[in-house]
Length: 317
Length: 317
Image 1 (tube, helix red, strand yellow):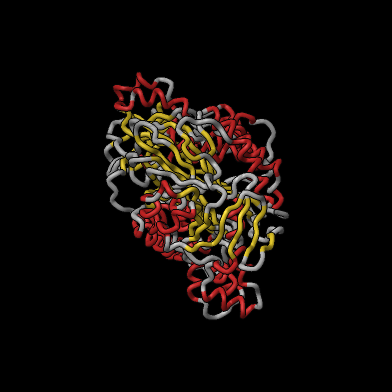
Image 2 (tube, rainbow over the protein chains, first blue to last red):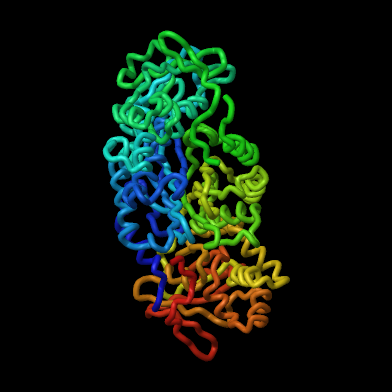
Protein backbone atom coordinates (compact mmCIF):
# COMPACT_ATOMS: atom_id res chain seq x y z
CA UNK A 1 0.00 0.00 0.00
CA UNK A 2 1.30 3.46 -0.87
CA UNK A 3 1.84 6.32 1.53
CA UNK A 4 1.77 4.36 4.78
CA UNK A 5 2.64 6.28 7.98
CA UNK A 6 6.16 7.54 8.66
CA UNK A 7 5.86 6.31 12.24
CA UNK A 8 5.94 2.70 11.04
CA UNK A 9 9.54 3.25 9.95
CA UNK A 10 10.38 5.08 13.15
CA UNK A 11 8.96 2.25 15.22
CA UNK A 12 11.14 -0.19 13.25
CA UNK A 13 14.19 1.94 14.20
CA UNK A 14 13.20 1.68 17.85
CA UNK A 15 12.53 -2.06 17.69
CA UNK A 16 15.87 -2.71 16.06
CA UNK A 17 17.62 -0.71 18.78
CA UNK A 18 15.86 -2.15 21.84
CA UNK A 19 14.96 -5.79 21.21
CA UNK A 20 16.73 -8.43 23.30
CA UNK A 21 16.37 -12.11 24.02
CA UNK A 22 14.64 -12.76 27.32
CA UNK A 23 13.62 -16.20 28.50
CA UNK A 24 10.56 -14.78 30.27
CA UNK A 25 9.09 -13.20 27.13
CA UNK A 26 5.89 -14.83 25.85
CA UNK A 27 4.55 -12.20 23.40
CA UNK A 28 7.27 -9.73 22.31
CA UNK A 29 7.18 -6.01 21.54
CA UNK A 30 4.86 -5.20 18.64
CA UNK A 31 1.52 -6.66 19.70
CA UNK A 32 -1.31 -4.88 21.55
CA UNK A 33 0.52 -5.58 24.81
CA UNK A 34 3.65 -7.37 26.02
CA UNK A 35 3.23 -10.72 27.76
CA UNK A 36 5.75 -12.44 30.05
CA UNK A 37 6.16 -15.25 32.53
CA UNK A 38 6.17 -14.14 36.16
CA UNK A 39 9.45 -13.78 38.02
CA UNK A 40 9.98 -15.28 41.47
CA UNK A 41 8.97 -13.09 44.42
CA UNK A 42 6.76 -10.02 44.28
CA UNK A 43 6.10 -7.70 41.33
CA UNK A 44 7.24 -4.07 41.58
CA UNK A 45 6.04 -1.26 39.27
CA UNK A 46 6.71 2.45 39.02
CA UNK A 47 6.24 5.26 36.50
CA UNK A 48 7.81 8.70 36.20
CA UNK A 49 7.43 11.52 33.69
CA UNK A 50 9.83 14.21 32.43
CA UNK A 51 8.62 17.29 30.58
CA UNK A 52 10.71 19.73 28.54
CA UNK A 53 11.25 23.11 30.20
CA UNK A 54 9.92 21.71 33.48
CA UNK A 55 12.43 18.92 34.16
CA UNK A 56 15.03 19.61 31.48
CA UNK A 57 16.09 21.91 28.68
CA UNK A 58 17.22 20.67 25.30
CA UNK A 59 20.07 23.25 25.35
CA UNK A 60 22.09 20.98 27.57
CA UNK A 61 20.23 17.65 27.54
CA UNK A 62 21.01 15.57 24.45
CA UNK A 63 18.64 12.91 23.15
CA UNK A 64 21.10 10.33 24.54
CA UNK A 65 21.03 11.91 28.03
CA UNK A 66 17.23 12.09 27.99
CA UNK A 67 17.00 8.41 27.14
CA UNK A 68 19.40 7.64 29.96
CA UNK A 69 17.88 9.92 32.58
CA UNK A 70 14.20 9.12 31.96
CA UNK A 71 15.04 5.47 32.64
CA UNK A 72 17.47 6.20 35.50
CA UNK A 73 14.86 8.02 37.60
CA UNK A 74 12.63 4.97 37.38
CA UNK A 75 15.40 2.45 38.04
CA UNK A 76 16.17 4.50 41.14
CA UNK A 77 12.61 3.83 42.39
CA UNK A 78 13.10 0.13 41.71
CA UNK A 79 16.40 0.16 43.66
CA UNK A 80 14.63 2.00 46.49
CA UNK A 81 12.34 -1.00 46.99
CA UNK A 82 15.31 -3.39 47.08
CA UNK A 83 14.14 -4.74 43.71
CA UNK A 84 15.56 -5.66 40.29
CA UNK A 85 14.25 -4.22 36.99
CA UNK A 86 13.13 -6.43 34.10
CA UNK A 87 10.96 -4.58 31.59
CA UNK A 88 10.62 -0.97 30.48
CA UNK A 89 7.84 0.85 28.65
CA UNK A 90 8.53 4.31 27.28
CA UNK A 91 6.01 6.82 25.94
CA UNK A 92 7.41 9.73 23.98
CA UNK A 93 5.57 12.71 22.62
CA UNK A 94 7.74 14.69 20.26
CA UNK A 95 7.47 17.98 18.36
CA UNK A 96 8.05 17.62 14.62
CA UNK A 97 11.72 18.67 14.73
CA UNK A 98 12.61 15.66 16.91
CA UNK A 99 10.65 13.00 15.03
CA UNK A 100 13.67 11.85 13.09
CA UNK A 101 15.38 8.49 12.96
CA UNK A 102 18.58 9.98 14.31
CA UNK A 103 17.00 11.68 17.34
CA UNK A 104 15.07 8.53 18.23
CA UNK A 105 18.09 6.35 17.69
CA UNK A 106 20.20 8.53 20.03
CA UNK A 107 17.45 8.62 22.64
CA UNK A 108 17.12 4.84 22.67
CA UNK A 109 20.90 4.35 22.59
CA UNK A 110 21.02 6.26 25.88
CA UNK A 111 18.18 4.30 27.37
CA UNK A 112 19.36 0.91 26.19
CA UNK A 113 22.97 1.44 27.35
CA UNK A 114 21.66 1.89 30.89
CA UNK A 115 19.09 -0.89 30.53
CA UNK A 116 21.76 -3.33 29.33
CA UNK A 117 23.93 -2.56 32.37
CA UNK A 118 21.10 -3.73 34.58
CA UNK A 119 19.78 -6.62 32.52
CA UNK A 120 16.45 -5.01 31.67
CA UNK A 121 14.80 -4.39 28.33
CA UNK A 122 12.51 -1.89 26.56
CA UNK A 123 9.40 -3.83 25.51
CA UNK A 124 6.74 -1.26 24.76
CA UNK A 125 5.29 2.19 25.10
CA UNK A 126 4.02 4.78 22.71
CA UNK A 127 5.26 7.34 20.20
CA UNK A 128 3.08 10.35 19.47
CA UNK A 129 3.32 13.84 18.08
CA UNK A 130 3.35 16.90 20.29
CA UNK A 131 2.48 20.43 19.23
CA UNK A 132 5.16 22.00 21.35
CA UNK A 133 7.30 20.26 23.99
CA UNK A 134 8.89 16.85 24.54
CA UNK A 135 7.22 14.64 27.16
CA UNK A 136 8.80 11.36 28.24
CA UNK A 137 7.01 8.91 30.48
CA UNK A 138 8.69 5.67 31.50
CA UNK A 139 7.34 2.77 33.52
CA UNK A 140 9.40 -0.11 34.83
CA UNK A 141 8.37 -3.61 35.89
CA UNK A 142 10.66 -5.34 38.38
CA UNK A 143 10.61 -7.96 41.08
CA UNK A 144 11.92 -8.52 44.58
CA UNK A 145 11.86 -11.04 47.38
CA UNK A 146 11.83 -8.57 50.29
CA UNK A 147 10.35 -5.15 49.50
CA UNK A 148 11.74 -2.27 51.54
CA UNK A 149 9.45 0.67 52.18
CA UNK A 150 9.47 4.22 53.57
CA UNK A 151 7.55 3.11 56.65
CA UNK A 152 9.26 1.64 59.69
CA UNK A 153 11.58 4.30 61.07
CA UNK A 154 11.97 4.20 64.87
CA UNK A 155 13.14 6.97 67.16
CA UNK A 156 16.92 6.73 67.50
CA UNK A 157 17.43 5.27 64.02
CA UNK A 158 20.33 6.60 62.00
CA UNK A 159 19.75 8.21 58.59
CA UNK A 160 22.30 7.18 55.97
CA UNK A 161 22.89 8.31 52.40
CA UNK A 162 24.49 6.16 49.72
CA UNK A 163 26.44 9.11 48.31
CA UNK A 164 26.89 12.87 47.98
CA UNK A 165 23.80 15.06 47.97
CA UNK A 166 23.42 18.37 46.18
CA UNK A 167 25.75 17.29 43.37
CA UNK A 168 23.02 17.07 40.73
CA UNK A 169 21.80 20.53 41.71
CA UNK A 170 25.39 21.75 41.42
CA UNK A 171 25.38 20.48 37.85
CA UNK A 172 21.97 22.00 37.22
CA UNK A 173 23.21 25.43 38.36
CA UNK A 174 26.43 25.17 36.36
CA UNK A 175 24.50 24.17 33.23
CA UNK A 176 21.85 26.85 33.59
CA UNK A 177 24.39 29.57 34.33
CA UNK A 178 26.70 28.35 31.55
CA UNK A 179 29.66 27.93 33.90
CA UNK A 180 32.61 25.92 32.60
CA UNK A 181 33.92 22.91 34.48
CA UNK A 182 31.86 21.03 37.10
CA UNK A 183 31.93 18.00 34.84
CA UNK A 184 31.04 15.41 37.48
CA UNK A 185 28.15 17.53 38.68
CA UNK A 186 26.87 18.06 35.15
CA UNK A 187 27.06 14.35 34.43
CA UNK A 188 25.29 13.58 37.71
CA UNK A 189 22.51 15.92 36.62
CA UNK A 190 22.11 14.79 33.01
CA UNK A 191 22.99 11.11 33.41
CA UNK A 192 22.40 10.09 37.04
CA UNK A 193 23.24 6.51 38.00
CA UNK A 194 20.52 4.61 39.86
CA UNK A 195 21.99 2.77 42.85
CA UNK A 196 21.04 -0.72 41.69
CA UNK A 197 24.64 -1.65 42.51
CA UNK A 198 23.57 -1.61 46.18
CA UNK A 199 20.56 -3.90 45.84
CA UNK A 200 22.48 -7.10 46.53
CA UNK A 201 23.83 -5.81 49.88
CA UNK A 202 20.44 -4.31 50.69
CA UNK A 203 18.67 -7.60 50.02
CA UNK A 204 21.16 -9.57 52.09
CA UNK A 205 20.63 -7.22 55.03
CA UNK A 206 16.94 -6.49 54.49
CA UNK A 207 16.01 -7.42 58.05
CA UNK A 208 18.26 -4.69 59.40
CA UNK A 209 16.84 -1.92 57.20
CA UNK A 210 13.93 -0.05 58.81
CA UNK A 211 13.20 2.18 55.82
CA UNK A 212 14.60 2.88 52.37
CA UNK A 213 13.79 5.46 49.71
CA UNK A 214 15.53 7.28 46.91
CA UNK A 215 16.55 10.90 47.25
CA UNK A 216 15.01 12.58 44.22
CA UNK A 217 13.44 15.78 45.57
CA UNK A 218 16.19 16.87 47.97
CA UNK A 219 17.31 15.68 51.40
CA UNK A 220 14.84 17.57 53.60
CA UNK A 221 11.94 17.07 51.21
CA UNK A 222 12.46 13.32 51.05
CA UNK A 223 13.39 12.86 54.72
CA UNK A 224 9.99 14.30 55.65
CA UNK A 225 8.48 11.18 54.07
CA UNK A 226 10.45 8.96 56.44
CA UNK A 227 9.69 10.68 59.77
CA UNK A 228 7.06 8.78 61.76
CA UNK A 229 4.07 10.59 63.25
CA UNK A 230 5.09 12.83 66.18
CA UNK A 231 8.74 12.13 65.45
CA UNK A 232 11.49 14.38 64.16
CA UNK A 233 14.92 14.37 62.58
CA UNK A 234 18.30 15.83 63.42
CA UNK A 235 20.50 16.38 60.37
CA UNK A 236 24.21 16.51 61.20
CA UNK A 237 25.52 19.56 59.35
CA UNK A 238 29.19 18.66 59.80
CA UNK A 239 28.68 15.18 58.32
CA UNK A 240 26.69 16.15 55.24
CA UNK A 241 28.09 14.33 52.20
CA UNK A 242 29.38 17.25 50.13
CA UNK A 243 31.13 16.66 46.83
CA UNK A 244 34.10 18.98 46.18
CA UNK A 245 32.37 20.45 43.11
CA UNK A 246 29.40 21.44 45.27
CA UNK A 247 31.72 23.07 47.81
CA UNK A 248 33.49 24.92 45.00
CA UNK A 249 30.32 26.14 43.31
CA UNK A 250 28.95 27.37 46.66
CA UNK A 251 32.12 29.49 47.01
CA UNK A 252 31.96 30.69 43.39
CA UNK A 253 28.31 31.71 43.66
CA UNK A 254 28.48 32.96 47.24
CA UNK A 255 25.86 30.46 48.37
CA UNK A 256 25.59 28.28 51.46
CA UNK A 257 26.88 24.80 50.73
CA UNK A 258 24.54 23.39 53.37
CA UNK A 259 21.54 24.84 51.53
CA UNK A 260 22.65 23.19 48.29
CA UNK A 261 22.89 19.82 50.05
CA UNK A 262 19.64 20.14 52.02
CA UNK A 263 17.40 21.27 49.19
CA UNK A 264 18.99 20.29 45.86
CA UNK A 265 17.16 17.37 44.26
CA UNK A 266 17.72 14.68 41.63
CA UNK A 267 20.75 12.97 43.18
CA UNK A 268 19.05 9.56 43.00
CA UNK A 269 21.12 8.32 45.91
CA UNK A 270 19.37 6.11 48.46
CA UNK A 271 18.38 7.15 51.99
CA UNK A 272 18.23 4.42 54.62
CA UNK A 273 17.16 4.20 58.26
CA UNK A 274 18.79 1.61 60.55
CA UNK A 275 19.32 0.93 64.24
CA UNK A 276 22.65 2.45 65.41
CA UNK A 277 23.93 -1.03 66.32
CA UNK A 278 23.84 -2.04 62.66
CA UNK A 279 25.93 0.77 61.22
CA UNK A 280 28.90 -1.56 60.79
CA UNK A 281 26.94 -3.38 58.07
CA UNK A 282 26.69 -0.21 55.98
CA UNK A 283 30.04 1.48 56.43
CA UNK A 284 30.20 2.66 52.82
CA UNK A 285 27.12 4.80 53.46
CA UNK A 286 27.33 8.36 54.83
CA UNK A 287 25.83 8.92 58.28
CA UNK A 288 23.83 12.15 57.97
CA UNK A 289 21.27 12.25 60.74
CA UNK A 290 19.22 10.62 63.47
CA UNK A 291 15.48 10.32 63.99
CA UNK A 292 14.06 11.51 67.30
CA UNK A 293 10.79 11.23 69.20
CA UNK A 294 9.95 14.93 69.17
CA UNK A 295 8.59 16.79 66.14
CA UNK A 296 10.63 19.05 63.89
CA UNK A 297 13.57 18.86 61.54
CA UNK A 298 16.77 20.33 63.00
CA UNK A 299 20.17 21.10 61.60
CA UNK A 300 22.68 20.29 64.30
CA UNK A 301 26.42 20.63 64.79
CA UNK A 302 28.66 20.09 67.80
CA UNK A 303 27.61 23.43 69.28
CA UNK A 304 23.97 24.04 68.49
CA UNK A 305 20.77 22.99 66.81
CA UNK A 306 18.62 25.10 64.53
CA UNK A 307 15.12 24.19 63.44
CA UNK A 308 14.37 24.13 59.71
CA UNK A 309 10.98 25.81 59.70
CA UNK A 310 10.52 26.88 56.11
CA UNK A 311 10.25 24.50 53.16
CA UNK A 312 12.65 25.54 50.39
CA UNK A 313 12.67 22.48 48.14
CA UNK A 314 11.42 21.71 44.68
CA UNK A 315 7.76 22.41 43.98
CA UNK A 316 6.06 21.10 40.89
CA UNK A 317 3.31 23.73 41.00
CA UNK B 1 7.17 22.79 58.31
CA UNK B 2 5.75 25.87 56.63
CA UNK B 3 5.14 26.36 52.93
CA UNK B 4 5.29 22.72 51.83
CA UNK B 5 4.40 21.97 48.18
CA UNK B 6 0.86 22.34 46.88
CA UNK B 7 1.22 19.02 45.06
CA UNK B 8 1.24 17.17 48.38
CA UNK B 9 -2.39 18.21 48.87
CA UNK B 10 -3.24 17.38 45.27
CA UNK B 11 -1.72 13.93 45.65
CA UNK B 12 -3.86 13.41 48.76
CA UNK B 13 -6.95 14.25 46.68
CA UNK B 14 -5.90 11.62 44.14
CA UNK B 15 -5.13 8.99 46.78
CA UNK B 16 -8.48 9.52 48.45
CA UNK B 17 -10.25 9.11 45.12
CA UNK B 18 -8.43 6.04 43.81
CA UNK B 19 -7.41 3.79 46.71
CA UNK B 20 -9.09 0.41 46.97
CA UNK B 21 -8.64 -2.79 48.94
CA UNK B 22 -6.86 -5.46 46.95
CA UNK B 23 -5.73 -8.76 48.36
CA UNK B 24 -2.69 -8.83 46.07
CA UNK B 25 -1.30 -5.48 47.30
CA UNK B 26 1.93 -5.75 49.32
CA UNK B 27 3.18 -2.12 49.34
CA UNK B 28 0.38 0.35 48.50
CA UNK B 29 0.35 3.64 46.55
CA UNK B 30 2.62 6.25 48.13
CA UNK B 31 6.02 4.53 48.29
CA UNK B 32 8.81 4.67 45.70
CA UNK B 33 7.04 1.90 43.79
CA UNK B 34 3.97 -0.31 44.13
CA UNK B 35 4.49 -3.96 45.11
CA UNK B 36 2.05 -6.82 44.61
CA UNK B 37 1.73 -10.59 44.69
CA UNK B 38 1.72 -12.21 41.27
CA UNK B 39 -1.54 -13.30 39.69
CA UNK B 40 -1.99 -16.76 38.15
CA UNK B 41 -1.00 -17.10 34.50
CA UNK B 42 1.11 -14.69 32.50
CA UNK B 43 1.68 -10.98 33.10
CA UNK B 44 0.44 -8.49 30.47
CA UNK B 45 1.55 -4.83 30.26
CA UNK B 46 0.78 -1.94 27.95
CA UNK B 47 1.15 1.83 27.90
CA UNK B 48 -0.53 4.53 25.81
CA UNK B 49 -0.26 8.30 25.76
CA UNK B 50 -2.74 11.06 24.89
CA UNK B 51 -1.63 14.62 24.17
CA UNK B 52 -3.81 17.75 24.03
CA UNK B 53 -4.43 19.09 20.53
CA UNK B 54 -3.00 15.89 19.05
CA UNK B 55 -5.44 13.31 20.46
CA UNK B 56 -8.08 15.55 22.01
CA UNK B 57 -9.26 19.12 22.52
CA UNK B 58 -10.39 20.45 25.86
CA UNK B 59 -13.31 22.25 24.10
CA UNK B 60 -15.23 19.01 24.01
CA UNK B 61 -13.28 16.62 26.27
CA UNK B 62 -14.03 17.17 29.96
CA UNK B 63 -11.61 16.14 32.69
CA UNK B 64 -13.98 13.24 33.45
CA UNK B 65 -13.90 12.06 29.80
CA UNK B 66 -10.12 12.31 29.66
CA UNK B 67 -9.80 10.19 32.80
CA UNK B 68 -12.14 7.64 31.24
CA UNK B 69 -10.65 7.61 27.76
CA UNK B 70 -6.98 7.52 28.72
CA UNK B 71 -7.70 4.35 30.70
CA UNK B 72 -10.11 2.89 28.12
CA UNK B 73 -7.53 2.90 25.32
CA UNK B 74 -5.22 0.84 27.52
CA UNK B 75 -7.92 -1.53 28.76
CA UNK B 76 -8.71 -2.13 25.10
CA UNK B 77 -5.13 -3.37 24.59
CA UNK B 78 -5.52 -5.66 27.61
CA UNK B 79 -8.80 -7.04 26.18
CA UNK B 80 -7.05 -7.55 22.83
CA UNK B 81 -4.66 -10.03 24.48
CA UNK B 82 -7.58 -11.93 26.05
CA UNK B 83 -6.41 -10.63 29.44
CA UNK B 84 -7.84 -9.02 32.59
CA UNK B 85 -6.61 -5.71 34.03
CA UNK B 86 -5.46 -5.33 37.64
CA UNK B 87 -3.36 -2.22 38.22
CA UNK B 88 -3.14 1.19 36.59
CA UNK B 89 -0.42 3.84 36.67
CA UNK B 90 -1.22 7.31 35.35
CA UNK B 91 1.22 10.12 34.62
CA UNK B 92 -0.28 13.55 34.11
CA UNK B 93 1.47 16.72 33.09
CA UNK B 94 -0.79 19.72 33.49
CA UNK B 95 -0.62 23.42 32.67
CA UNK B 96 -1.25 25.68 35.69
CA UNK B 97 -4.94 26.28 34.92
CA UNK B 98 -5.71 22.57 35.37
CA UNK B 99 -3.69 21.93 38.52
CA UNK B 100 -6.71 22.31 40.77
CA UNK B 101 -8.34 19.88 43.17
CA UNK B 102 -11.57 19.99 41.19
CA UNK B 103 -9.98 19.22 37.79
CA UNK B 104 -7.96 16.35 39.24
CA UNK B 105 -10.94 15.01 41.15
CA UNK B 106 -13.08 15.00 37.98
CA UNK B 107 -10.30 13.37 35.97
CA UNK B 108 -9.86 10.57 38.50
CA UNK B 109 -13.63 10.16 38.94
CA UNK B 110 -13.77 9.34 35.22
CA UNK B 111 -10.84 6.97 35.40
CA UNK B 112 -11.97 5.23 38.57
CA UNK B 113 -15.57 4.77 37.40
CA UNK B 114 -14.24 2.72 34.47
CA UNK B 115 -11.60 0.98 36.60
CA UNK B 116 -14.21 -0.08 39.16
CA UNK B 117 -16.37 -1.60 36.41
CA UNK B 118 -13.49 -3.89 35.54
CA UNK B 119 -12.11 -4.59 39.03
CA UNK B 120 -8.84 -2.73 38.52
CA UNK B 121 -7.24 0.02 40.54
CA UNK B 122 -5.04 3.11 40.13
CA UNK B 123 -1.90 2.49 42.17
CA UNK B 124 0.72 4.96 40.96
CA UNK B 125 2.06 7.31 38.37
CA UNK B 126 3.22 10.87 38.36
CA UNK B 127 1.88 14.41 38.49
CA UNK B 128 3.98 17.17 36.98
CA UNK B 129 3.63 20.68 35.65
CA UNK B 130 3.55 21.45 31.94
CA UNK B 131 4.30 24.78 30.33
CA UNK B 132 1.59 24.43 27.74
CA UNK B 133 -0.45 21.31 26.99
CA UNK B 134 -1.94 18.38 28.89
CA UNK B 135 -0.18 15.02 28.46
CA UNK B 136 -1.66 11.85 29.88
CA UNK B 137 0.22 8.56 29.87
CA UNK B 138 -1.37 5.45 31.33
CA UNK B 139 0.09 1.99 31.80
CA UNK B 140 -1.88 -1.08 32.80
CA UNK B 141 -0.76 -4.34 34.38
CA UNK B 142 -2.98 -7.35 33.74
CA UNK B 143 -2.83 -11.11 33.50
CA UNK B 144 -4.07 -13.92 31.31
CA UNK B 145 -3.92 -17.67 30.95
CA UNK B 146 -3.91 -17.82 27.14
CA UNK B 147 -2.55 -14.73 25.39
CA UNK B 148 -3.98 -14.02 21.95
CA UNK B 149 -1.77 -12.22 19.47
CA UNK B 150 -1.85 -10.55 16.06
CA UNK B 151 0.10 -13.40 14.50
CA UNK B 152 -1.52 -16.59 13.30
CA UNK B 153 -3.88 -15.63 10.49
CA UNK B 154 -4.23 -18.25 7.77
CA UNK B 155 -5.45 -17.79 4.22
CA UNK B 156 -9.21 -18.30 4.17
CA UNK B 157 -9.74 -17.05 7.73
CA UNK B 158 -12.70 -14.77 8.33
CA UNK B 159 -12.19 -11.29 9.76
CA UNK B 160 -14.74 -10.34 12.42
CA UNK B 161 -15.39 -7.11 14.28
CA UNK B 162 -16.98 -6.95 17.72
CA UNK B 163 -19.02 -3.86 16.79
CA UNK B 164 -19.57 -0.89 14.51
CA UNK B 165 -16.54 0.83 12.99
CA UNK B 166 -16.27 4.50 12.10
CA UNK B 167 -18.62 5.52 14.90
CA UNK B 168 -15.91 7.21 16.97
CA UNK B 169 -14.76 9.14 13.90
CA UNK B 170 -18.39 10.13 13.33
CA UNK B 171 -18.38 11.60 16.82
CA UNK B 172 -15.02 13.25 16.21
CA UNK B 173 -16.36 14.96 13.07
CA UNK B 174 -19.58 16.04 14.76
CA UNK B 175 -17.67 17.47 17.73
CA UNK B 176 -15.09 19.26 15.61
CA UNK B 177 -17.69 20.71 13.26
CA UNK B 178 -20.00 21.62 16.16
CA UNK B 179 -22.92 19.63 14.73
CA UNK B 180 -25.82 18.95 17.09
CA UNK B 181 -27.04 15.41 17.76
CA UNK B 182 -24.90 12.35 17.05
CA UNK B 183 -24.92 11.64 20.78
CA UNK B 184 -23.92 7.96 20.56
CA UNK B 185 -21.07 8.79 18.23
CA UNK B 186 -19.83 11.62 20.46
CA UNK B 187 -19.95 9.34 23.51
CA UNK B 188 -18.12 6.62 21.57
CA UNK B 189 -15.41 9.17 20.77
CA UNK B 190 -15.02 10.78 24.19
CA UNK B 191 -15.79 7.77 26.39
CA UNK B 192 -15.13 4.58 24.41
CA UNK B 193 -15.86 1.28 26.12
CA UNK B 194 -13.06 -1.31 26.00
CA UNK B 195 -14.45 -4.72 25.07
CA UNK B 196 -13.42 -6.49 28.27
CA UNK B 197 -17.00 -7.82 28.32
CA UNK B 198 -15.90 -10.23 25.57
CA UNK B 199 -12.83 -11.61 27.35
CA UNK B 200 -14.64 -14.48 29.03
CA UNK B 201 -15.99 -15.82 25.70
CA UNK B 202 -12.65 -15.18 24.05
CA UNK B 203 -10.80 -17.11 26.74
CA UNK B 204 -13.21 -20.04 26.59
CA UNK B 205 -12.69 -20.27 22.82
CA UNK B 206 -9.04 -19.27 22.69
CA UNK B 207 -8.03 -22.34 20.69
CA UNK B 208 -10.34 -21.29 17.87
CA UNK B 209 -9.03 -17.73 17.60
CA UNK B 210 -6.16 -17.37 15.12
CA UNK B 211 -5.52 -13.66 15.82
CA UNK B 212 -6.97 -10.87 17.89
CA UNK B 213 -6.25 -7.14 18.12
CA UNK B 214 -8.08 -3.96 18.97
CA UNK B 215 -9.18 -1.55 16.27
CA UNK B 216 -7.72 1.77 17.36
CA UNK B 217 -6.23 3.26 14.19
CA UNK B 218 -8.98 2.37 11.71
CA UNK B 219 -10.04 -0.85 10.01
CA UNK B 220 -7.59 -0.88 7.08
CA UNK B 221 -4.70 0.44 9.16
CA UNK B 222 -5.13 -2.23 11.81
CA UNK B 223 -5.99 -5.08 9.43
CA UNK B 224 -2.63 -4.53 7.73
CA UNK B 225 -1.05 -5.74 10.98
CA UNK B 226 -2.93 -9.02 10.76
CA UNK B 227 -2.19 -9.98 7.14
CA UNK B 228 0.52 -12.65 6.92
CA UNK B 229 3.47 -12.25 4.57
CA UNK B 230 2.42 -12.58 0.91
CA UNK B 231 -1.21 -12.71 1.96
CA UNK B 232 -4.05 -10.27 1.42
CA UNK B 233 -7.48 -9.30 2.63
CA UNK B 234 -10.89 -8.88 1.04
CA UNK B 235 -13.14 -6.48 2.94
CA UNK B 236 -16.85 -7.03 2.28
CA UNK B 237 -18.25 -3.59 1.59
CA UNK B 238 -21.89 -4.65 1.91
CA UNK B 239 -21.31 -6.21 5.35
CA UNK B 240 -19.38 -3.35 6.94
CA UNK B 241 -20.77 -2.68 10.42
CA UNK B 242 -22.15 0.83 9.98
CA UNK B 243 -23.93 2.58 12.83
CA UNK B 244 -26.97 4.64 11.77
CA UNK B 245 -25.31 7.84 13.02
CA UNK B 246 -22.33 7.19 10.75
CA UNK B 247 -24.67 6.60 7.79
CA UNK B 248 -26.54 9.82 8.63
CA UNK B 249 -23.41 11.95 9.02
CA UNK B 250 -22.05 10.64 5.71
CA UNK B 251 -25.25 11.87 4.05
CA UNK B 252 -25.19 15.22 5.90
CA UNK B 253 -21.56 15.87 4.98
CA UNK B 254 -21.73 14.36 1.49
CA UNK B 255 -19.02 11.85 2.33
CA UNK B 256 -18.65 8.15 1.53
CA UNK B 257 -19.87 6.06 4.43
CA UNK B 258 -17.45 3.31 3.40
CA UNK B 259 -14.51 5.71 3.75
CA UNK B 260 -15.61 6.63 7.27
CA UNK B 261 -15.74 2.96 8.25
CA UNK B 262 -12.48 1.95 6.54
CA UNK B 263 -10.31 4.77 7.86
CA UNK B 264 -11.92 6.24 10.98
CA UNK B 265 -10.01 5.21 14.11
CA UNK B 266 -10.54 4.99 17.86
CA UNK B 267 -13.49 2.62 17.92
CA UNK B 268 -11.71 0.26 20.32
CA UNK B 269 -13.69 -2.68 19.04
CA UNK B 270 -11.87 -5.99 18.65
CA UNK B 271 -10.87 -7.58 15.34
CA UNK B 272 -10.61 -11.36 15.23
CA UNK B 273 -9.51 -13.95 12.69
CA UNK B 274 -11.04 -17.44 12.75
CA UNK B 275 -11.51 -20.43 10.51
CA UNK B 276 -14.85 -20.20 8.66
CA UNK B 277 -16.04 -23.42 10.34
CA UNK B 278 -15.96 -21.69 13.72
CA UNK B 279 -18.14 -18.71 12.90
CA UNK B 280 -21.07 -20.21 14.83
CA UNK B 281 -19.07 -19.66 18.06
CA UNK B 282 -18.93 -15.91 17.43
CA UNK B 283 -22.32 -15.06 15.98
CA UNK B 284 -22.56 -11.75 17.86
CA UNK B 285 -19.52 -10.51 15.91
CA UNK B 286 -19.81 -8.85 12.52
CA UNK B 287 -18.28 -10.70 9.57
CA UNK B 288 -16.39 -8.07 7.59
CA UNK B 289 -13.80 -9.79 5.45
CA UNK B 290 -11.66 -12.77 4.53
CA UNK B 291 -7.92 -13.25 4.33
CA UNK B 292 -6.49 -14.57 1.06
CA UNK B 293 -3.20 -15.97 -0.16
CA UNK B 294 -2.46 -13.21 -2.65
CA UNK B 295 -1.19 -9.75 -1.70
CA UNK B 296 -3.31 -6.62 -1.56
CA UNK B 297 -6.28 -5.26 0.34
CA UNK B 298 -9.49 -5.25 -1.69
CA UNK B 299 -12.92 -3.82 -1.15
CA UNK B 300 -15.39 -6.30 -2.58
CA UNK B 301 -19.12 -6.49 -3.12
CA UNK B 302 -21.34 -8.95 -4.97
CA UNK B 303 -20.35 -7.44 -8.30
CA UNK B 304 -16.73 -6.39 -8.16
CA UNK B 305 -13.52 -5.96 -6.26
CA UNK B 306 -11.45 -2.82 -6.02
CA UNK B 307 -7.94 -2.64 -4.64
CA UNK B 308 -7.24 -0.15 -1.86
CA UNK B 309 -3.88 1.19 -3.02
CA UNK B 310 -3.51 4.42 -1.11
CA UNK B 311 -3.22 4.65 2.68
CA UNK B 312 -5.68 7.24 4.03
CA UNK B 313 -5.63 6.50 7.76
CA UNK B 314 -4.39 8.27 10.83
CA UNK B 315 -0.77 9.36 10.82
CA UNK B 316 0.95 10.53 13.96
CA UNK B 317 3.58 12.49 12.06
